[in-house]
Length: 56
Length: 311
Image (tube, rainbow over all chains, first blue to last red; front, side):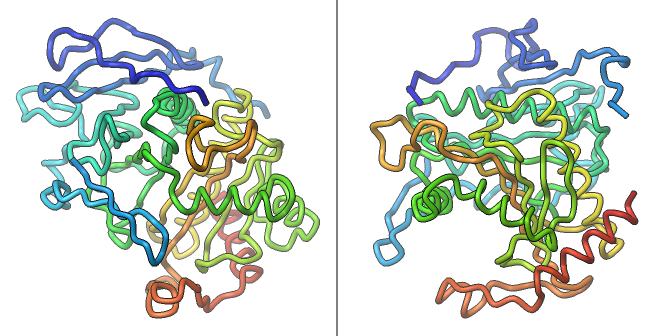
């Protein structure tokens, strides 16, 4: 795989959640930075209940 | 910062991460660092009152940029859940999180191998009971991944594809299957209740899976872990190891050929009976050869029964 530089956490308020910063399939991704500078990523599944129904 | 030293006799890297000596060790229930931060309470690793799935840089990393990565994946804000008891939609969502982290970490020049895993139970060294897994981004190709590439060369093609075909033809060790995934106790299982969860189609990584395949992978993993818990009617300890294609650039040692690698998840449970642990002792540690007390075919039959019981 071709390499590329690491993506850096966004600047901003510490321990504050950012606006939605991306998606992966059904997941909304929000990135933030902890008080000590470590990255934190939150994933939220925003599928509706009827989209989560399983095939029989 | 960790230090790598190459152990010449075994031909493998040893990682010295001495900062991990002080990591949090089995904290009291109300001091779990992976719980959400309660209003008025002390801030945990996740400074929000609720969350679905969270990933963060390990506070006590074995690897860190610019020489790798160590991340923690918290499956839920429910301290008392487990991978098996997650709602099916949450387990499926976790597959997408794996996909996201594999893609992003694998694109980094300093990471040759993205390894997603879960240690469950104090028997395998768990220090936090809150349901979570980990991701290591290795700045080199670790030995097991290297051996899997060597197996491809030895068998003249994708080794997991060939082994899956053998297991399906035999059938005696298959314990669960759906349209996308097959679960079996391997012919040469090292652990008494070892199981491999293998994609039916050749998929180098989670990145190559169709959405429906990710759903079926989650379903298979939950079916197996439910079965494990039913086997001895107790929380079943295991190491869950997600094996995928290396992500090393083509110029790096151990780089995989295009399309090489086959996504599969291996489980190494240390229990050989309800109360007895398998220890890695003289033969396993000193000679590198597992001695097993159980036949894979017999373990497969017991696991099939346990999965049926777990329903």
